[in-house]
Image 1 (cartoon, rainbow, N blue to C red):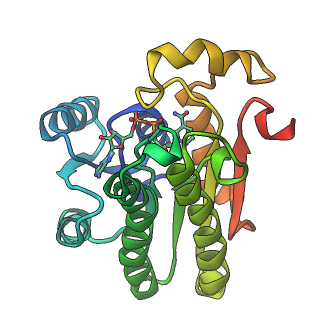
Image 2: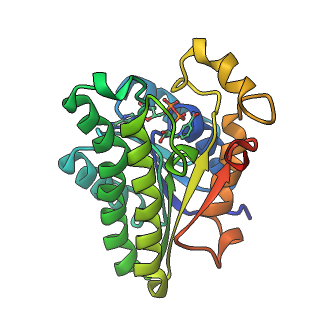
Length: 245
Ligand SMILES: NC(=O)c1ccc[n+]([C@@H]2O[C@H](COP(=O)([O-])OP(=O)(O)OC[C@H]3O[C@@H](n4cnc5c(N)ncnc54)[C@H](O)[C@@H]3O)[C@@H](O)[C@H]2O)c1
C-alpha cells in the first residue's frame, strides 16, 4: 500500500518542475492523478507516460484563473474518478522587475495566478470535501511569502496571501476533517528560475545550492498524506536555510 493509495489527487501545474516531481512521487505512492495545466500537448504527453507505466492519470487543460476552467476540472474529475481526495494547488508564475516599473496589469496577473486561483481551486475542493466527509489541500506558497525581497513585490504579496489563506482555511475547516497546509520552497531548480540567476541564487542560499524538485515532492507528500495527520493551517518551509539567516 502506498501512502496515497487510490487517492484522487488534482495537481495544478502538475506537468513541470515541483508539480511534475510530485506527480511522479504521488503516482509511485498509489495516487490517481488529475494533472492540470495550460499546455495541452505536453499535458497529454505526460499523462500518457503515467498510464503506460500502469498508473491512473488524466490531463485536463485549464487556466487556473478561469472560473469556468476550475469548474470543468472538478466536474471531469468526479466524472472520471467519482471523488477527489487531495488538491495540490501548485501552479504559479514568477515575476521579477523593479516595483516602480511594473505595469498594474502585470501586478494583477501575478496576484491572479499566484493567489486568487489558489482560493478558487480550494473553494471547489472544499465543496466536494464537505460532501465526502473530508480531504486534503496543499498550497504551494514560497519562502518569499515570509520575507521581503526586492524586485518581486507582487509575487511576495501573493505568496504571503497564500500563507494566511492556508491558515484561515485550516482553522475554518479543521473540525470537518479537511486539512490545509502550505509548502514554502526556497530557490528550486525549475524553469521558473531564469538560467542566468541560478548561480547567484545558489550562492546566497546557506547550503550553497538550489533545491531540487524531488526534495519539494517529498515535503508535498508529507503534507498530502496521513504522515501530517495532526497538522493544519500551517506551513513547511524547505529552503536550504535561506529564511533562517
Ligand atoms: N522554483 C522555485 O524556486 C520556487 C520557489 C518558491 C515557490 N515556487 C512555487 O512553486 C510552484 C511551482 O513552480 P515551479 O518552480 O515548479 O515552476 P514551473 O514553471 O516548472 O511550474 C509551474 C507550472 O504552472 C503552470 N501554470 C502557470 N500559470 C498557469 C495558469 N494560469 N493555469 C494553469 N497552469 C499554469 C505552468 O504552465 C507550469 O507548468 C509555483 O507556485 C511557484 O511559485 C517555486
